[in-house]
Length: 288
Image (cartoon, rainbow, N blue to C red; front, side, top):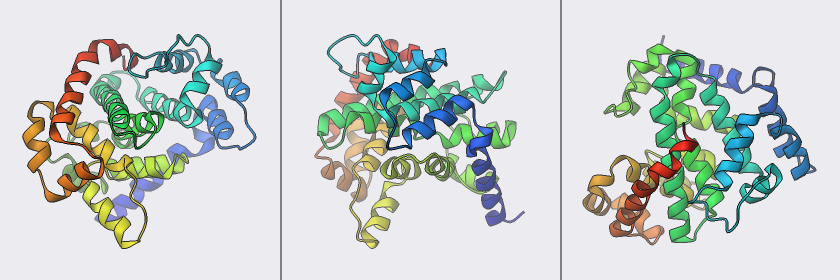
């Protein structure tokens, strides 16, 4: 099968995963409610309260130490008000995707979920540091940035594991050669089909390549979203925390451009990395 054929075949299978008829009823209802301009917190609460695991995750996130809400959240409705509809939808999507990988295979993607949660936390801290975007939006994009990995796994099963060890060098190239598209593109297809915000989809698509995003947006004379470089930096902070200062200041002129656009320096990123390391024990419950 030619490269383009494999790419289109993968996209078609991902589209099938997102079809309303094939997703769990709770997520179907959540997507319908969050996509309607006439829905209320009460409508969303009525759906979530029937899924105990999702309810616990949503209330837990709203109370997480890094989220910064000043008082204890004890109800689903309060949690929805704190997190917002898009965040709740993102959490539901993430849970459904990871729960869809059953049996022994769930252990194979545990590291991806852990990494995604840590990137979400780091994105939130970057949002707080810069003040350029809401921490809700940053957390959602960080949480879902690698959603393409479990999505391709659902399509290709153990064949994906053969090329996608958690720290596999050249992962993007291996994914493209094996499946027709890499996880950023596959994740963006999925997120777009789920009707997530455009800047969140862009952050998923370009979290390994913000330079291409910048060139595309400048060519189209469109405004650059700070969410793309923010998630890119968060991903690097989590992955390469031990070499931050040198890596973040000399990696490339484009990299320097994004640091400047966010008004950040390598020392600030190292400080955030140390904060994330200090919170890992506290956040572990949210990705177990």
